[in-house]
Length: 145
Figure (tube, helix red, strand yellow):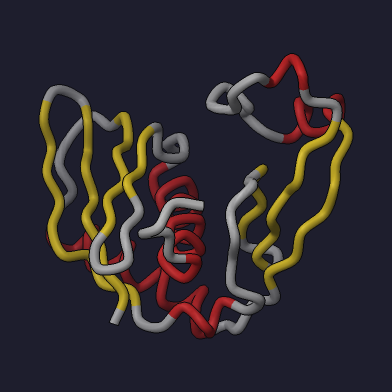
């Protein structure tokens, strides 16, 4: 893992992605930059978020954190993973026979190789610091308190 890797921030990214999927029926982020102090996720989107929507997404993530969901990992055969998940961002997918799937209770599941908390409550408070929208891309910047 990179020197600046932060497993709490990375776990928060998973929750943010699921909050966006549930609230707006969009895809998970297509780009993420995760740092210990601040991070960002980029989504293909059709407009900026309203202040109320920003607050609602932030609350969705914090509710998942407060739910103290267990974070578990499981190995999944490639054929099953292809049925359940979009694996377009997985490098060298043709070489893979199994995937590690990270589950956060029944809130989120995603193939991932990163380190994670063992429970969502370990993440801390999630705060969206700013958002931006340009040429079909919604950027959400966030931090943990």
